[in-house]
Image (tube, rainbow, N blue to C red; front, side):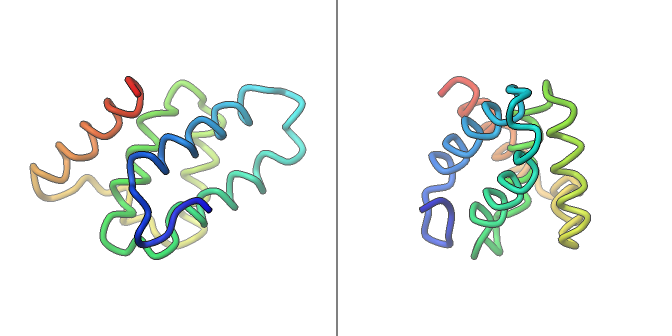
Length: 108
C-alpha cells in the first residue's frame, strides 16, 4: 500500500515517481494516466498532515522535465484545495529538506 501517516516518506515518493514517470512517458497510457495519477497522489498524501507540502514540492521538482505531469499535479493540488503546499516553506530547514529529498530521490 502506498502512503499513509506511518509510511517512510522517501521510499514511497520514489515508488510513486517511478510509476508516474512511466505513466506520463508512454503515449499508450494517455486515456488512464490522469485518474491513476490522482489515485497515487491521494494515497501518497493520505494522513500526511505535517509534510504533504514537502511531498508535493519534491514530486514537482522531480518531474519538472515532464510538463504535462507538472500541469496535472498543479491542477490536482488546486482542485483539492491544498495550494498552500506550493508556497515555499518559511523555514530554511524545510526548504533544505525538500531540496535534499528531491536530490536523493533523483540519485536513488
